Image 1 (cartoon, rainbow over the protein chains, first blue to last red):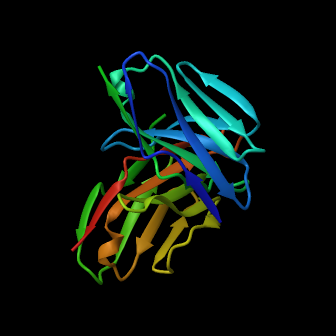
Image 2: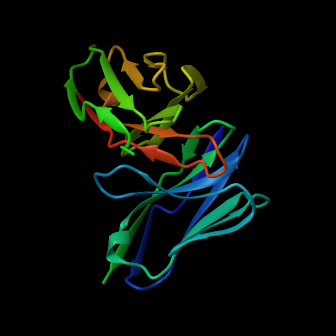
Length: 110
Length: 113
């Protein structure tokens, strides 16, 4: 089976940088994804790491260390619209099955 | 391209009834996955269909079933509904590739009374 742990809540101020960590235990692992979900909305894809290292997409970056079973999402220059829940999700095989972490609720304050 | 569509958006049923939810993936996507989202259990994988075949299955009872048609549209069915089946049911479509990006539909909010 698979399990992913991430903090339940994080608070930061506008313009700051925040890091959301994710540790995983899996019987099979192909990669780690990150999704954003606003209240009442659907999850939207942010990034995917299959290999160790940092992936950068605009203000968002994601990191993976397979040897440590650890990843993180880094959000820079925080904006109020970044207030949302963020989920890490492990891909366990060659298909599209994702196991999600419990989600981190990010609150951005002015 | 049009996004993933799900119908109906809201549904109210009573215990013991059955329900069928529908999902139309993004044109060209052959993989369709279903997830259940609840405040207590979070996002949980139900099953994935690829080219009309169930490729992956989550840890849900046999009351939950699905299928995929030749045009990649998918349906999921829940029989003998229980109160605990109240949830947001999300469908996601995607292609298997290096970025593993999945596109979620708006979901069907099922309430079981």
